Image 1 (cartoon, rainbow, N blue to C red):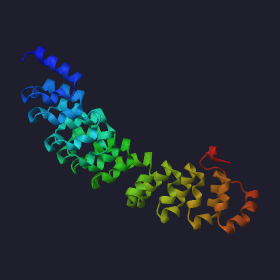
Image 2: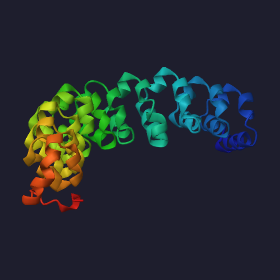
Image 3: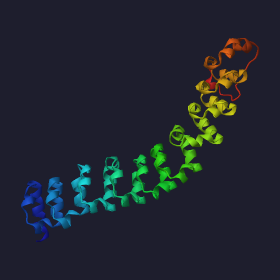
Image 4: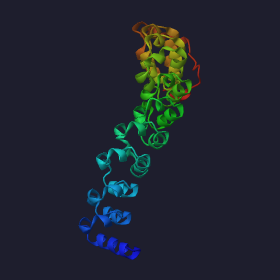
Length: 280
């Protein structure tokens, strides 16, 4: 058939979507005819002959209004990298939220990962073991979702740049997913510098550490409530804490509360960090 005949059939299909089902297989095997039929009515896809059924443009037209039908496609189509890429580009999170169901060969593809992670960083955990050891991919995932750290390889979980990235954005994630790292004083110190109220998540030994507690007070004056009982009974530490916020008086030990007001009449505790914005 010539081009004019094909154009006429396509026009007729757009007018009557059931016409395609009555066509002989020879006409259905024409890519333009089948593509037009699927555009006109997506249910026509089920009548498309097998050789043409795998055409990526026909499949995308079939999936246009219902991406969940991707999982009804033939296994070889679900492994088609070009099709998966097109689905991610056209449907975004509606498609990638089921990333864990994809074929392992797709989960091991760097290009697919680069398209997925900016949209769904939490899907990092479903990448192949090889890709979960890729520092660049993990950093990309963390920009979208810090909980992607959970799926990182052991090597990357102890990488200084990765740890610094999490501490700078939300150290609570680190305390939840890898609390053993908080046993390191330098990391604990960086955590309270990033978020003063992280003091409550640190090991008890660091809640009794003057340097860490004072650093936490600098960034969050009310973090004194999480300090150890020993420091709450230390007149010097309590005095500094009260210089940040007078409310810290109520977190001091009862012994200190009894005579602190008398002492403060004769001794002024300067703000050692010059953070006047926290004063009350």
